Image (cartoon, rainbow, N blue to C red; front, side, top):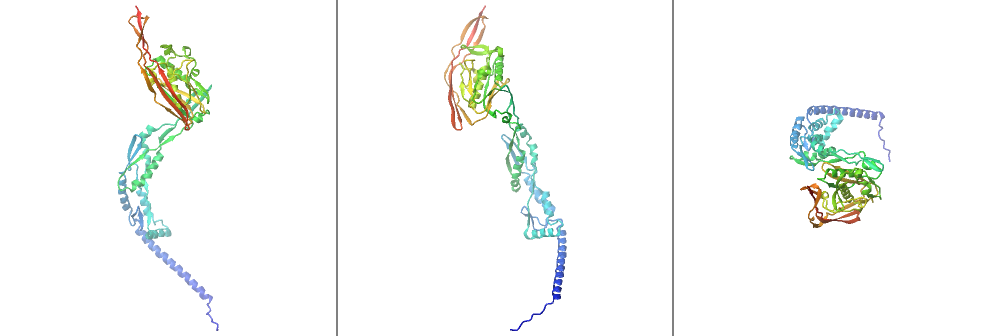
Length: 475
């Protein structure tokens, strides 16, 4: 086989070819850039005041449109949106606000500026890329909106005024094992304008995209304002909250009776009962006499209604009895009155009263909770009402009280007239008042964590009571 000889390529020929190719590419690139520059300049000039081709805004083609064209499109849409109505409601209050009031609509200035600036950054490569991409694939811009929900603070000022409450810090001062200054903490509330703004903003897309004006209802949110010092933080006795409240009325009471009720209830105020201890009304109140500040008012004594020191104190024991019932605490001693007393039936059926007569008749209950119990009283001298609230810590007790059943009703006996030589002849003075007899009963069931811990029935037998009149015989 003969050897084949290839022509020998000289190095200078290769060098010459590379050199020529390089300068050819450089020249071609420069020409291309020059041509692109001319085309780009022409394109920029042509679309100087218009949107470049291939641009869409809210699925509408706006390529080639100028600023005025775009504004006209969305001004009409905003006029339609402005007719949408928002109805803000809170319980029985409501207020109507238009979308126009809230400045809801397309942000025409922002959208127009964004569309008009595409491909006009002044950077050749960046702008060329944007123009080509829009022309080939299209550029889809997102719409932007305006909204000024802050105006709702002014629009809802009246509703805010009606529901706003300041949180209250607790006050708890103990001296000699008695609370001498107490105020339970309480939460405040206010309209939650931040949440309300978010709720408005969440429905803006629905408003914007609706082909017709709408009526949109939004509930006004309320947030809780918490105190800096809660009742629990203010004391180390475990007292956190109210666990039971009792109320009563005593309209038409004579001034001395009102005075005695105020005095006795104030002496109950602030008493602390430790866990496991039994409370005694008589022991807590002490001596009831003129020597301890009480005045004469009507009391039941020896089968008669007579003036005696401390008349009206049973209004206090009756009211406290009702608070103990509501708290679900075990009552170890209670006695009903001998006859029905009108004061205790002004806001209640018969059977929810408790009499005391030191030292033999008492009202007692046991603190079977794990924390102290605080007694607080409040008397309203204007409306003649009394309230007791027991504070402690709830332990999942559920209290059920049945409505008192009143049976065996009997009329009062005929009135009794007694001659009184100390009264002028012809003068008649009533010293006792009639009351019908009856039997009243109700039941209380207390459960804790699903288990019955108290199940009892209270029965009160009221003796019919005759009116007694003194008839003057003095000449």
